[in-house]
Length: 302
Figure (cartoon, one colour):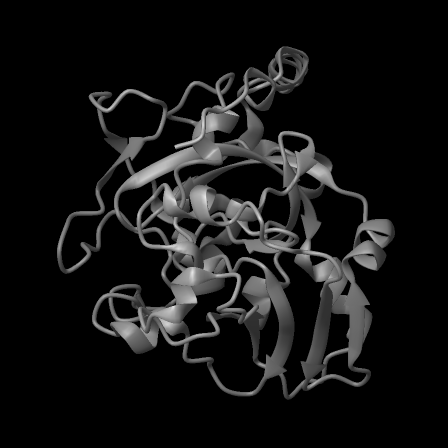
């Protein structure tokens, strides 16, 4: 693996600025309104808030099967991936379908830092200082119809650049989806970068979605199309293994994956022997999102 330059690891001034900001908020974040602060603190309650995962680990330990199935493959195989020009199309059950260049999106919406936990279904997690804005701001541009019940995300299909797409590991292009109320929730984020830098290719450049209370595979990378639809989308992982991967995929420590427990997770911090920590319901965002699933059997709708 290519050696990471010191300049690519957590910049000291960013670290100190973030630490000062977090201390100014205090630990009583549960009572703060979502729109008032860029950092949602509940999910970080059982971690050291002053230590987001180092840039080195965030950008070299990834799930991105379009570039390979090993955790190091996305970093090794995506460096020449071309993300310009890039257009995102929003269509389907909308009054006014529209296409946006990445430049238009970046100039239209102000990115803010949002420190979230990324929880992966394999039992590992990271604390990532994403830069981005609420997906709802973008979706509101197209005036979607009342007939729209779900939002489908389609990622780029380019096997010439993405060597993982040359194999039938998944049904390409990668498809994911959310219910309308999930997509419009202010925590659902269009990610534009991390640690104050442009989003690296291996992390889903030029734009990706992030849904912090769901397992990582729900957050589609390198999106090219957003489609409002009437019926629940059949996502790539649902097609590949419906017994293991459901549509909702909310982080739930009480429901085991068929092949392993989801009750604990291993923070990625360079220490392979670090103690595992307890997985939180909805990844720690229960106060903000549990109402979306009121009355639902979360074991049935996994």
